[in-house]
Image 1 (tube, rainbow, N blue to C red):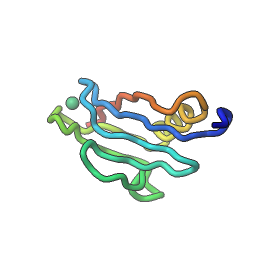
Image 2 (image 1 turned 120 degrees about the vertical axis):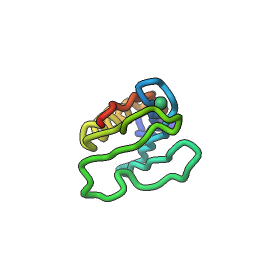
Image 3 (image 1 turned 60 degrees about the vertical axis):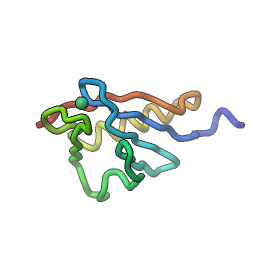
Length: 95
Ligand SMILES: [Zn+2]
């Protein structure tokens, strides 16, 4: 396996109480989101979306997520490290 290749990344998303919410998976230029126990789909759901919200599946109050751009930049930053294929990201509470 060529270690200089970008192998993509699987970022586990957690709520501020560290419940597993889902995963953002980047491969090549595409990012997909898979909610815990659910199906992988495009992320953000519409290309033009600039805001993304998700709820904690364990019932924490409020909504998590926020602006798409900083989350996308963090996923890309993590994916740029070829030695890294998994990562952990804590979502902010935004409402
Ligand atoms: Zn939670």
